[in-house]
Length: 318
Ligand SMILES: [Zn+2]
Ligand SMILES: [Zn+2]
Image (cartoon, rainbow, N blue to C red; front, side):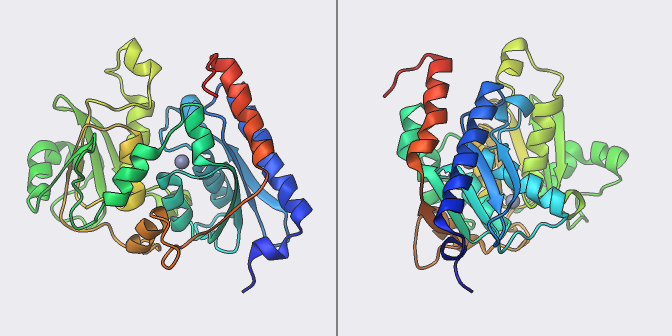
């Protein structure tokens, strides 16, 4: 199959990269999130969905522009497999978004600004790249990480002891018997959120259990002080329990959510489409194994929303 990047005329690609930049500007003008936008394009070069960073608007640390665009596309097409589409993004994606792009089976991306450009306006994802480069599914602990990950074969028993009654009475779930992935967030022994895989039900390729739990926690937690609400997407001080080992997408989302401790099971998350070792290779930029082909175009247009962001936040880091 020929590459979309070769099939779609360059002037159309340029138009889409400019649209992703406009989308980035729109999001930051409305204070919905950082200055990032994305557009999903079909093989005819037609836009099928777009999105911008919605982290501030939704308190959802996973609502980066690329993921928002993927969610919008999957929901409007009513399918989780977006193979054959091109993702056009105003800035080089972070590891969480790269993982989500793999999960959605999008094989080609076009980006404008670079990671370095984003770092210049204080959106550095160097740390998370470093962590993801060291991540191994069979050994999830990463040295120098800000999230402590503990893996245990006894995790289901521990989850039953701590949350079993509540899960049974509220959801009718016996965690010992279930084959579903379950994620639980607690703070100081108070159950804050429960998440399940909702990929097919929500037609959202990113709706893994850990991400569902994070979204639930940041949207509903009642114990928050004003300070905590103000930074509602930051779950520092919260702990997470998973009956599985997080896939790269979940692991990166846990990091963006700044969860302090993760207790997880020995079983790898059920394979959902993407090959995890290839997802990690994609993040590591291993060209031989990467699931995504990356192209760059229209950097100048994509720096415009960055400048607007700087003006809004009075930061002059250039
Ligand atoms: Zn991202
Ligand atoms: Zn996952």
